[in-house]
Image (cartoon, rainbow, N blue to C red):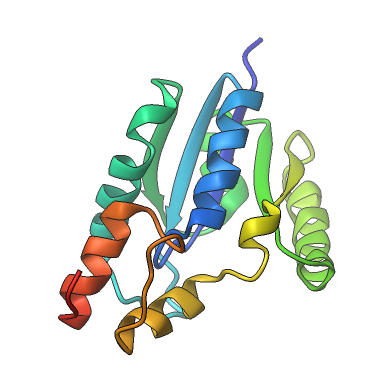
Length: 163
């Protein structure tokens, strides 16, 4: 039986912390589906299609077992559609754990056959969030090292800042 995992998130934009978690998850599972959530409660900087394209380029060298897909609704339904037995979530700090634990328990209640796996962000990225990367880019700060190259290009283009 193959081990399939989904790695869901808004990824607006994907950061190097997200990319690090995806890279490591790709080695732990036979197939990893990075799920780009269309969250109606947020006003994203990039469309789902733009985020998918950015992430596909960023994970292109991870191997054929990694794919990227958009989704709406519940993560457990996305997992079910992809026949995934695992949901991968990244943790930066203890403060992330409380909300993630509640969500993991909720997902387990909704879909008992799906387990959540937590991966700690690499120490280098413990401070990093999508919001922070967007804010630095918006004000012309250096974003190299915060986001994958395709995302850096998109952010610079969106905020019309030099590379």
